[in-house]
Amino acid sequence: MDMGKETISRKDVRPLVPSELAEGMELLPSAVAVIDVDGFLRYANQAFERRSGIPRTDAIGAKLPELLSIKAEDYDACMASVMDGRSWTGRWIAVLKKRPAWIQEVQASPMHNQAELIDSVMLVIRDLTKEDSLAKRLGSDSSMTAMNSLAAGVAHEINNPLSFIMGNVAYLVEEFERVRPSLGEELIEEWGGALDDLKEGAVRVRDIVQQLGGMVPDIDEGLGNVDLGALLDTTLALVQNQIRHRAHLVREYAGSNYAWTNAAILSQVLLNLLLNAAESMEPGHVDENELRLVLRSGSEGRVTIEVRDTGCGIAPDVLPHVFDPFFSTKPVGDGTGMGLTVTRRLLTQLEGHITVRSTVGEGSSFIVSLPALDRSAPRRPSLTEDIPKRYSDVARILVVDDEHAVLRMVERILNKHEVTSCDEGEEALKLLRENEYDIIFCDLMMPEMDGEELYQAVLRDKPDLAKRFVFITGGAFTADAMRFAKEISNPLLEKPFTPVQLRAVVDQHVHTPAPPD
Figure 1 (tube, one colour):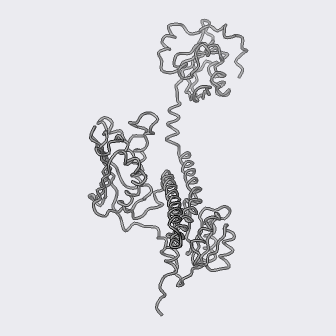
Figure 2 (cartoon, one colour; figure 1 turned 180 degrees about the horizontal axis):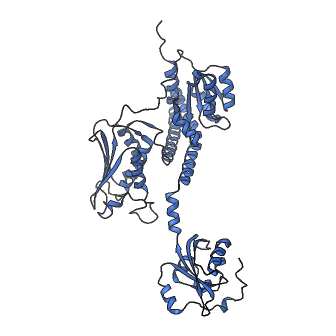
């Protein structure tokens, strides 16, 4: 929209705001600007200068849409309404040269001269930048779905190479132990040390991927009989570094406590509580500080986990708000304020709840309560049950995976068996139609024909053979794959798996004693 020719220069600009009005505008927290009908800036208050980072001496006399790089259509819509004598409210995004983008809610009102003609426009600008950031942190359903898919996809892509790295490392360790007697002491120390480092590094990457997977928790997937003491110890290993410099650790586990729950999600909850507890205590005072983990059976068929620290504690006026979204006692930029909110939400989905007690200067206790093990709850078959048994020492195995390194690793580990490998679903379907196999290890996510499509095709032609599928997966991240992984009754072998896990499936199948005559 052409608002008129640029008939003035900066030197010709004269203020259009009475001095008494300008004095009041200087005190406003919101940015205020006045432009003439051609868009030249005639006035800007201190808040405008402060937020834009543009000195008023440089801003006055400049064209506002060019000064702030406002989109032409947004600016024109505003001016069309104002020049028609109507106020306008809308959103602009100012792209600044020396500052981050300025997301603005603009309220524009026409200003009249003595002849009652519109000669200028007053803009009151509310800064929405922080609120927009907040909305992004909260996330819409679609953005959260996209984030879930992204995180799951990244985990899947890492798990694929990690599976053959860990598998081959484990294979090398076994071979090293086999030939150890023939090696000299120097080689034993050098090679053994290198293998230990490789194994440690692979395990650390696996733990990171598991934590990444915790970003996108699936309540139904992974439900099982969880040993809470073992889960606590595993989670502690991830944060041991942060704890050992701040406090001595005390475990107080009363009896054997189990829950039918999702181990990955519960580990994420415990990880957050442990980190918060560690951060509440100053480093360098290990002898004075204590982090105590208490696990015990509660009342009414529940089990409780208490994370208790001797840190700084939480003030009484703050305590009621610790589970509120974006409430944080940490310095700005050090936390999102969402940790405990997410923790409580996840526990709610696990039919659990969390409470807190705290005294300033003495410490805090976060108590998690969960339903005790319900042995009647449904569960996924184990990796070795419900697979038709074959009475032989050598199994006929088909391995289907689009990662060639995974195929080679499985062949290497299962070299005592008859292993056939292929890297695509169509080829596997042809083999399955022409041959019989005792076990089919099949990757769930593959290009072209994926694991589900292959399974469904075999199910139509050879339903008994379909029962022998064991799906191997680095993480299902498409909606269809996630649904199939939940619904299928066949076992799932998660990448990265170890030689022990892989052989256990096969050995259970082929080492069953022959039935009596």
